[in-house]
Image: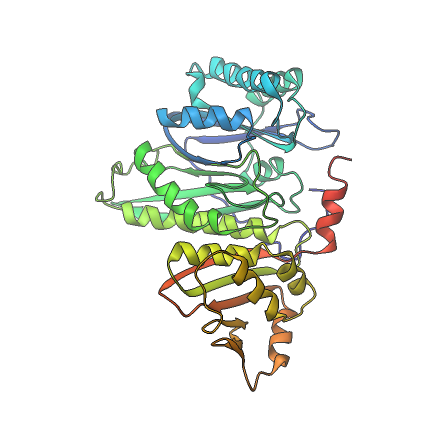
Length: 408
C-alpha cells in the first residue's frame, strides 16, 4: 500500500472479533518490502466454508485446489500470501501450495483439504517454498492480530485497508459477520473478484452458505469493474464457525435465513464498493443504473459496457458530460436497444430523452455534479422492464503510472 491513499477511501470500520476465527500476520518476504505479507486465520473445528472463484482459464494452483476442495464443505485454516500470485507457475507453484496445506494441516491435525490458500501479486514467479515454509512456521507461532492488520497484510496496490461488517437476528441469537478484502486493479467480475474473506459465527450448512454466497456475489462482485481485466487469482470465501449458538440454518425456510442472507448481501455490497473506491488511480466512484432493458441480465451487460468504456471513464475523469460516449457504449453492448427510445442522464438530470437531446438542457448542474467524487449515470432503454446497477471508477493518468511500474 505504497501509493497515495485514494480520495475515495473510507476509514476502516471496527470489525467485531468472530468466535472461532483467529487471525495472525507475519512477514514471509515474498517481496523486498518492509511489511507483513502472510495472513493466517485459524478456524474452529466444524467451520462451514463456501467460495466463488475466477473463471480465468490461466488461474493459479490456489484457485484450482480451492475449487476442488470447497465441495467437502469444511475449513480449519486460511493462508493468504501477498506479493506473488503464484499463477502460471506450473508444477512448482502447485507444490508450493500443497506444501503450505500439508504444513498447516499437520499442525492442526486436520485434513489438508480443509486448508485454503490464496496468493496475490506478480504473475509468473513460483512462490518460493523456503519462504513459504518459514513464513507459515512463524505464523503458526505468532500472536493474534486484529482484522485491520490482516486487511493491510493481504493488500498489494491497495491504498487503504478494506473491511465490512453486519449483523442478523437468527432465532433468539445475534450473529455477526466481519469481512476483509483486497483489490485495486485487474478487477472485472467473473463469478468472483479480488481476494475477499467473510467470517461469521453463524451456524449454517455449507451447501446453503454456498447457495447464498453465489447469489450475493452475483448481485455485488459481479456488478463491478475497474479495468475490465479478470484476475487469475480471484477468490471470495465465506467461513461460518457456528459459535453464535443459533439453530443451524439448513435452508431458506429456517428461522433467520432471510435475515442472514440480507446481512451477507450487505457485507458483499460494502466490500465490492470499497474495491471500486480503491480502483488504481481512481478519483470518482461511478454508479450506472440501466432501466427499461429487455431483461435484468441484458441491463447488466449494457451497464458493464458503459462501465468498461475507456472513453466514458476518461470523460468522467475530465468532468465532461459527454453523453454521446454513453450512447456509443450502449450501442456496442450487443444487447437489444433502440436509439429512438434511449434516455441518458447524469446526477438525476436527463441530458437526452427518447432518442433526442433535451431541448432546454442546462449543463451547469450536471457539470457541478461531475466535480464531485460520487457520480451517477442513468440510462433508460425504453424497451422492457429489465434493470441493473453496476459500479466502476474513472480512468486517470494514475492508473497508467501504477501499472507501468508494477514489477519494479
